[in-house]
Length: 392
Image 1 (tube, rainbow, N blue to C red):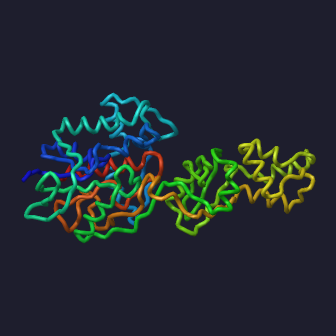
Image 2: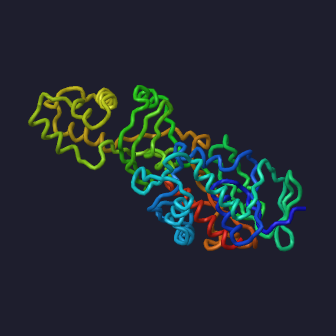
Image 3: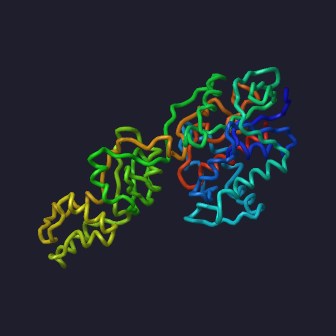
């Protein structure tokens, strides 16, 4: 029998952060994970450079059935707190786009930071450990594991979601929640590329690899970010962001020329350059091949003099309201996060402990709290883990 104060299930961002925080309080902590390495998802994040936080992260950057739940943790542990930790460890960082902080060199530096913090806090990490059964016992929990029987006062579930199963993602955290009677909201892939209907996919196939700055809308979500056309469908930050709002069967409205109203401009072009062609004008605003394809598909190949007011208005509407109806998404295989999860109504927003189960905590992605793209999900991991670490 191994007797501990705290067992943390999951050696990812939230789990390691919580373990170090609790360890510094003098708690005897052990992190358990079935993977052969800690922090695999950290290593691949941000294209290998880890977008470790967003300076402007607020509750408005998160999706949840209970949007107020994340407020407490985000206020108590802010992006500046984590940035201070990063700088204390000498990790060089850069602000790639406003608010988005990345490692200058490698994601490995963030993982090494967390592992070093755990070492300094005397929090042990045990890998390649499977958990067969969890039982509530007097003053705590008993775990039947491949390394033997373990007992703890506080059990922290930081097992993540279903995203990227090749890195070891599983539904273990949801199973534990259900075992103890907590509601688990339906899950689905978030921050994920879209797939297209065969005809639309074939029509866009010649543009694979092209990117354009667009504005996208769906179900109240609005983002102005780059869109990438791929051989499977649509990706890039704009599509990943809006995928968290999209539901099967929804159309996505895409403004190909955001921040402008092109109708007045093309009316002037028709009057001043009647022999000019829409394709030339559009190629100055979109990638040339994209402009050519749009003009071919919509029959905009004549010169401006052949466009009456109604046709000009239609052209402008098509560019500002390009509608795409995805066939689906690429699913958990490439999704950065899992939407849904443990219903936060059963969890304390202050301590992250299950309301009806003293000593049982849920942190990070396993909860029904999902951030926008750009470092917000890491910030939720740090904040929820740090707050739970004060009480476990």
